Image 1 (cartoon, rainbow, N blue to C red):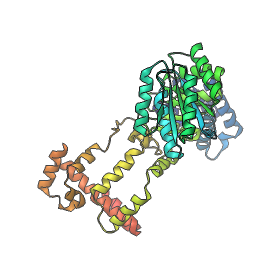
Image 2 (image 1 turned 180 degrees about the vertical axis):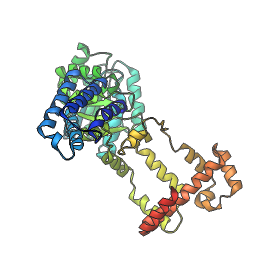
Image 3 (image 1 turned 135 degrees about the horizontal axis):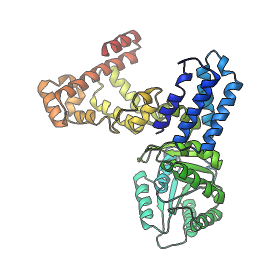
Image 4 (image 1 turned 30 degrees about the vertical axis):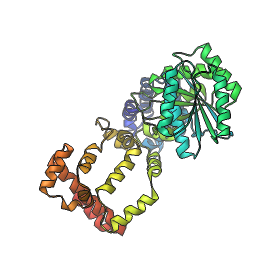
Length: 442
């Protein structure tokens, strides 16, 4: 996401990163390129112009040209202003109700139904809530069926009534059901249409007035750029929602909606969708997003994702096995599964400072571990437990069974041996030995 914008901003700021003398003239030229990059990313021209004017005023006001590190100060100003443009502080979600009511709205095709499921899954796993999904799209039976499929997939109950054609009554019945069955969050998926119209507005307003939700969230497809911003404004003028959800940020989006929607509707982006899987949902952090747009990575989010998958009991078992030299391929396979749960590899690499730029032209397979997994699955249980017993004939059998070559099997075995030694040294505090081992691996 934001690959094109990040690349253009990097080129625009190149002269301010220590390459050449920094003057008021080339600061102005640089900001002109920054404005052009934002407009190319589908940010409204007026917003882009105001942004660069503000950056220029702050840069000259802070005496960037006379600073000992003018390039770093200039990039910091751009980063801070980009953060403010996208909302400044991270916006939380209001879950104070008993039960808490969340009303989901958006156009047809925005990903509203799927994201309702993602949000339910997020709250269930991270906020220790018991959510109830409610199907209030009385026009499309397929939408009701879709929500049931999603609910079954994530283990969340779905309330629906195909016989009832009044969405207000369905919502009210769902709330009664939630209270009677211990659900402390109710997520109501409403009908969407191809464009904002009076009928949709009247219907969502009726539901809103009847149930008085703690949160009304408007779901927009980030790939539609300024159309998403304009749609959000039209909807907000009528309903005055609480926040925005941007879906499909993993797609071919130029980023204009994420950057400019807050300044247009004056409502925060609360969540973003980053993939098709039900756990591909992130809280929107303006500061972290600004870091990523400017190629600085997002180490905090990367660490948070790793912590979410961290199993203390499993870690203790692994430590004991490493200490006894019994760490095998079955254990390695479990570690791979934990990494895969963190998200797709390209997204994870983009969180590492500098890595996104280095890998922008590389096609990273979303299932980057499939060859390793195939090789491990082609081993016998005994071979996984004791890799040292894998001789030449076994390597040929494993390669044939996994659709890989003997060379690839050899490479995996070599890397596994080196990794096992390094893990043993790290556990034993052998820092010098570990450094030597890393040099030998180059």
